[in-house]
Image (cartoon, rainbow, N blue to C red; front, side, top):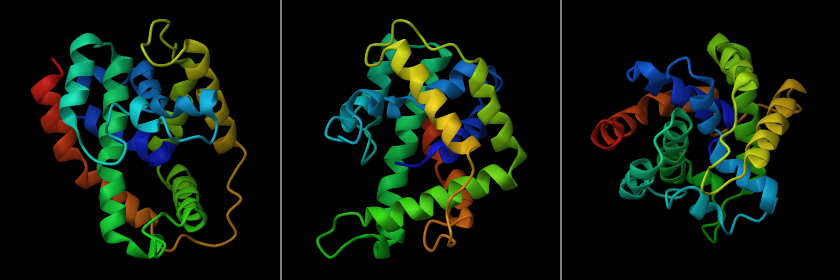
Length: 203
């Protein structure tokens, strides 16, 4: 549920400790690709947990481990890092930003997406590494044999998201809760789990 820049920067920060992925375009393509399910299902999120290996709303690393036992390319490493990042992002903002929740406990999607979009564009503008990673996606080759997504869906999602960020930010007010500072803090806070699980399961 984090947006593109958070996922790319989380993956890059992780790869600084797992050097073989650090400069691999396919690793970063994997790190944005679980959300390519929207190419097939558009705004229907009912299958999102399936494409996130059971980690959309909370961490279930054993399911990522099972995936990595069968699928272990750089793309697959990035795919697992994406879902483990979301697994931490969702419970964290629900705990730290209760103002983003409606009285019935559901997400105030208007405020949430305003904040996350504004913050993602701020990260893109303020962190040179973010711009580099966005450009790196251009050269990545989608896998032809992914068990959940087609190469066409992965490539289309990559192209659509790149177009979205290249078009520029449309926000007319600053983020209130999920600010750039919040995102940067999360990028540090999510790393211990990512590193511990990867070192345990990703050989």
